[in-house]
Amino acid sequence: MKELNILFDYPFRYSEKMERKDRVSYLAALLKVSDVDGIVKEELDIISQVISFCHWDNDLLDEAYRIYKDMDYEQLMPSNEIRTLFAPFLLRDAIVVAYIHEGINEAEEANLINIGHQLGIEGENYERIKKAVSNFIEAVIEMQKAMN
Image (tube, rainbow, N blue to C red; front, side, top):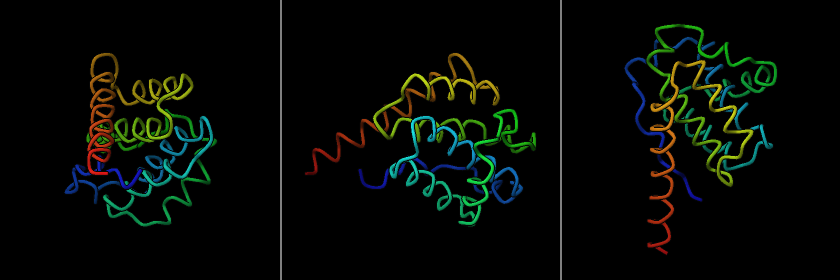
């Protein structure tokens, strides 16, 4: 699949406030989700889009690689202000990463639910974000088929 532009709406005016440790933990969470069944190129492409759209330094991904395996989801975005602002975006991006390669399996779903819990997004709101991602990806796929 070509570039999937679901990652287009971040609160950019606040992203400058996001400390390096928050950015690294954001990316590490995405790596952790993608590594549940092995990191694949499509998942790395999505993570690279996050870095690009947020105008973050590429070296943050290297730092995230060093910490993601040992990171506990309770360590996600330690700054409360940033966590509140970016929580829905992190959950959305984590769902995209899990979904993009063969859909969401049981292990990925468990990780996503855990991330949502740690971010305070559960139940109906979790399901809304998950459905929005699924609907968007399916729409992009259908449009691409129509154009071929």
